[in-house]
Length: 215
Length: 263
Image (tube, rainbow over all chains, first blue to last red):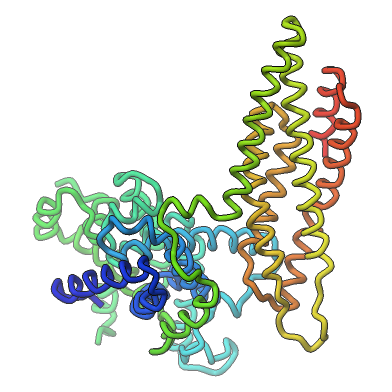
C-alpha cells in the first residue's frame, strides 16, 4: 500500500530517532523498528522465496544483521530501505540454497511451495468435484507458482521488487550488484518468461469480449 | 508503421521505458500494439491475484520475541563489526600467513640465494599445511558430530543444532581464506576440496537453529552424499604426511598435488 509523502517522511524521521537511541545503548528502541517494518519485509520475503517458512527466516535474519551492522547505517537516511535491502540479499541466498536442495530431491516439497494456509483454494483437493471455473483457478495458480519458481534468483528478485514492491531500478540494481541497464533487462526477461509460461492459461479482455464472458 | 517490440511494451508497463511519451503516442494510434500490451497486462494481472499470507497483526512483536535474546546489549559501530570473534579468528589466520610468508623470505635469504625461491615456497607451504590441517580437523569433528546427532527422545519434534551452526559460521570464514590461499599457491586439489567443504559449511551455517528430525536427516544425507567427510580425511592425512616429511622434494610435492586432484 503506497504511503503518503508526509507519513513516509514522519516514519523515516521516527526511524532515525530509534536508530540513534539503539546505537546509544537502548536496545528496546530497536523493537520499534522491528515491529514497524516486519510485515512489509515478510511480504517481500514471501514473494521472493515462495514459502512462509523461508520468509519468516529471512525477516528474522534481516533484523539480526541490521542490528549487527547498525553502526554502518548511521550516515544513511532511511532505515526501512536499508533493512529491506539486507532482507532481499538474504532472500537471494536462501533461494539459491533452496534451489540446490530441491534439485537434489526427487519430488518437490508441496507443503512448502504452497504455504498459503489462509487461502481457501488450498483446502480443495485436486480430485474433488469442483465447478470448472474453480478448477481453472487452481490450475492457473499452480502454473503461476511454477512460472515464478522457474525464474532465476535475479529475475525473481527484479520482478518482485519492481512489479510488486514498486522499487526503483537503482535500488534493485544495488541488491543485484548490477548496472541499471542490466537490471532493466532482468526485469524484461522475467516478465517475458512469465508471459511465455502463463499466456496460454490467461484469458485476455479481448478474448472475453469476443466470447461475451467479460463481467 | 513499425510496431513496438515486446521489450518496449514490457518496459512501458513496468514503468522503466526510456521514451515513454513516444510509446504512449504509438499506443494511442496502433490497435495491434494495444492488443499486445493488453495480453501482457492480463498475465501480470493474473499474477497480482497470487495471495500473500497475512502473518498477523502481532507479527512484529513475534519477530522481536524471536530475535531479542540474540541481540547484544549495544550494536556495534562499523569498526566494532571487525572485532567480532569469528572475524578476529580469520584475521588472525591471515596475519599468521603473512608473517610466516615474510619470515620465510627472511630465512631463505640467509640460507642460500640459489635456493631462494624453492625454500620460500617450502616454508610457505609448510605454514599452509599446518594451518589447513588444523582447520580440516575442526571441520571434520563438527561434521562427525552433526552426522551423529539424533533426537534424544523419539517423540521430540525438533533438534537443536545451533552449536554446530555457530561452529560452521566460524569455520566458513577460515575456509574462505584457506581456499583463496590454496588457489594462490597453485594447489588446485586442495582448493577444490575446500570449495566443496565450503558449500557444506554454508548449508549448515544457514540451517535453522532448530530442525525437525526429517530436516536433520536431510542434512546428514547431504553430508554423506557428497562424501565430504571422506575427502576431508584423505586430504588431511596427505597434509600430515607432507608435514612429517619436513622438507619434501619438489617432485614429491607435485605428485602429491596431482594425487589429491583425483580425490
